[in-house]
Image 1 (cartoon, rainbow, N blue to C red):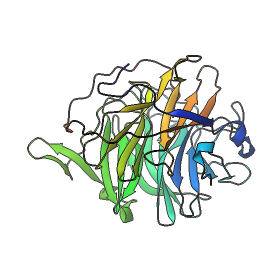
Image 2: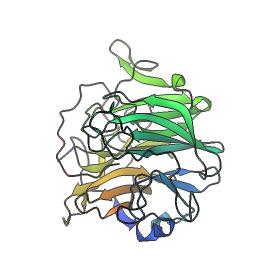
Image 3: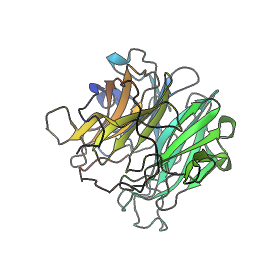
Image 4: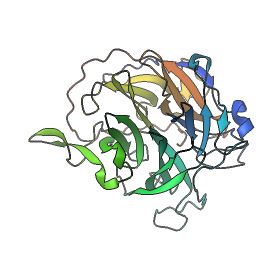
Length: 362
């Protein structure tokens, strides 16, 4: 399916499988996500979602591995885990498998998954989503909250900074990046069928744990876009996991596009400016298909050592029929020079055209 105005030939090249046999030493075999962030000591932390030591055993989430790899072209290698010899669950998780169909029912937390992280000074902040159920329609969630660590990710502290999730709200699944004294947050609904798209907010770095300090970016028909107005979607379309990064003077947004069944990137010169049309980096396909496609992909996180000419993406792949592979893959690509895109104006949600590919969950 072609995205109007997009580049649809897959642009990224496969580098390696970064989880699996290589991470068994920390009790990490089947896992997904792998959102990376630079820690204050220079190491890179990777946050993984529902993780298993072997087939269906040793379930925990989230877990964290660290890396000091500098030669990314040779592939990411991990050096240590939060928890020591076995990567432990770094935050409380109820693991209530009842999966009640309604969010208000008992058994409210099936799992907890990481969304994105940012390091400010010596402290790393992690955005986390409490998931009510994968089985219920729309993947209902309970709330999103922030946790922090100031010892390289070994110990994590859950904060009172919490956003209760309302049906259809676009502040559930976060990606965030620092720039000029602010933390900018692009967020969406958690499920991949909501056509509401993404909204943009910002908060002063020093007030990141104050929900009331977050400021929306919104549209007014009379005066246009401005900070402090009710949030207006900046990209109104169904969306999965996202990763926002400031790279060499360019804003880069990578995300899973369920309509295109692909990991795509967009660029912008200003966070509150115009975004380019999407470029397909990793295209989805069927198991066993040729042509450079990858079955049942999702995610799409940017390694913090990436440059415009060498962008490294972490992409999840899960065979939901057999349960294996369930892993994280590394790809490399480059970003084209920014082009002048069409002016950003609010619009109604795009028609919902989400083919069923049996994509994995985040």
